Length: 87
Image (cartoon, rainbow, N blue to C red; front, side):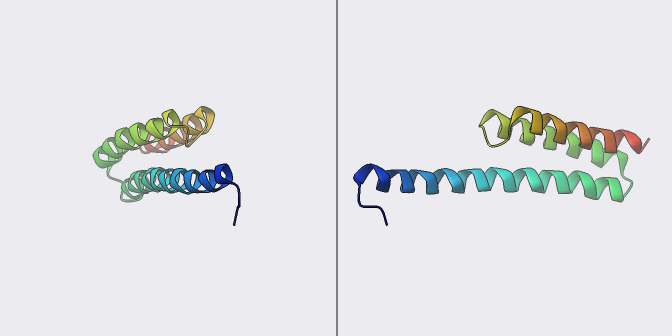
């Protein structure tokens, strides 16, 4: 355990931020799974709706700095490509 006050604060702040990041990443994973499940079920409408929701979730995560903007863009592009392949 740290002895210096600023080091103790850093530990607390890092725990808080890690918990927030984990929650946001978990939400992204859930959104991606919904899109994947709709694709596997061959439900075009559900996949399209899930894609819109997932895109929004991923973009918000990128805005908050949880994902790099290129990583977020790549995730969205791959999901969109998978949905478009269904047609």
